Length: 381
Image (tube, rainbow, N blue to C red; front, side, top):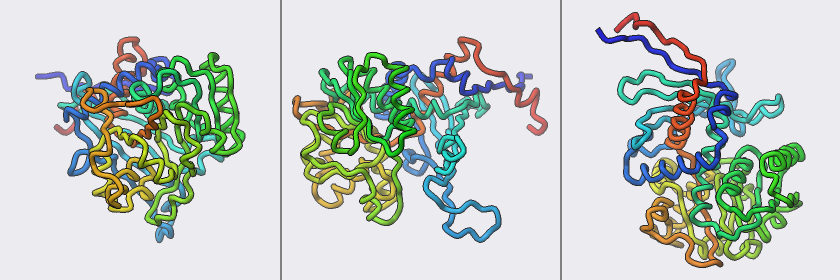
């Protein structure tokens, strides 16, 4: 009779660091490989269209039951399941709770864990701390974009929102833009700005100029690579968009590459004259179906503004380029030194599976992690 014992490993955040979760160059390679598998169709995510971001639990504005949480900014639970083929052959789910009030007690806004499972039996393989995993894969996707679309002579980065995503987006820019030596920072509070400066000085001593900008205009002007990583409100009210960071066309340097893991309000003139690129077109089509026009206020991801522009008749479907088509040379990337490129980063559970699987296998090689036993044999089978 086959052995029915099931063991899996637990990887704490220090374990994940030892296993290389902060290796941005390797993460970018993993994200590029993942995007190619998406294009080939060797993956599955949730929903009827197999491209859903995940399943989210939101709370009512006025709960009728004692103890039920009340709706508030970033107050939610979410499960993000996926399967990824290729060299990964792995299923997994990222699970997290989010509450912006966490920051008042010294906790991250979201607290994340990741479970990896055997694709055939469903048995657990690893339970891992996933805050760094999620942060680095989020930065890795802009890194893929910068690799193919940023000007090779880029020297100045701008980070609007110097939190966790701002740090990993900057890490990705450094990994892909060898001449980068200057950064402009625009933040809302001194604590996040100081933390970002400390991060840059510790991790990237080659950055010889760090400028704290008073305004978004000051941050954006003169920057070659730009990332908006601010926390954005989302909802049914189209006026929510007016709360997003505002960018005038004249502020943006010709040739700038703008990576968007978060939201901003660009003038239509800028959007219509820029190259519009998304990480996975099917994801935005899925959002458009799940959250009908106007989709952008409900999601806060700039690619949803791209699909809204199609709805408004201002662009056609062919005006949006899939990142993978650029990687595979089926579509051009940058076509001139002056071309402005806006790249939407939506966030997908296959990213967590790809990078989680890579870190898990490295941990296994190095003997990192605590072995846990699910059962010697199942009580009821």
